[in-house]
Image 1 (cartoon, rainbow, N blue to C red):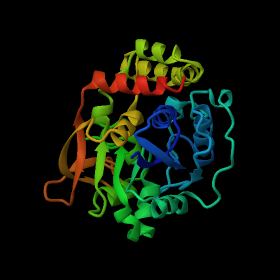
Image 2: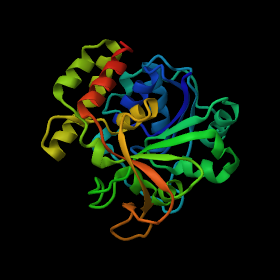
Image 3: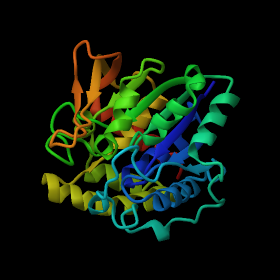
Image 4: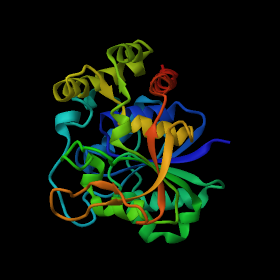
Length: 309
């Protein structure tokens, strides 16, 4: 039986790959896509989610808008340098328009409804800031037993990509990340930057994606701006599939090799803000993905997205 899945996202180029991956995978039943601020502002992430689902042929999947800002401290930092001003590498207008308006109930109500209505535990895959998930756990603690696990792309055990210490999704809302990673009611898997940066798709991978059909061709065009930014920052012609790596773990539990450890998030206003730090004895364990068969991961993502044509 397919795993019921909610993806919470801030599209975002790599988010688009992750959504297409979920849409192509029969192991999961994508019940809803909820959106959050992050790579670009909330109205744009919400419209982009609808566009990507329409491109994937899954426009009937409900989309609901969530948090437009962090829980505590507002922030101005976005990621347009990586994702383009429209969040999809300058290609948002080339994608089909969303078929339906976002669900007016909003993200938290929609997530709660999916949990209540599901006969099986639901996996939640947040691939942006954890604001919506923190709110869900706070507002609906009675629904925690209905969540099979949370699989988050975020954090870093080494260097960050926003500051020397902090990864983008953690830095967007450290208080929310700390709330989710230090609770004991729902199992959490963290897919950190340390691992996702080791899973870059090379030019041959992108070319194969683009040759796979009209949907793959359009997705490859979306990747172009992100690919150029990666070359500028890292000196390598590649595309890091951060969010798709996490969603693949949600689809195929155990595809990434994890180690259990308690992780806390720095919530002070100094240079360590947003750092995700293992703290022995500092709380419940989360499963941190530390290794994978990178070639197999990349091949699996490519094969699955290619099914969409």
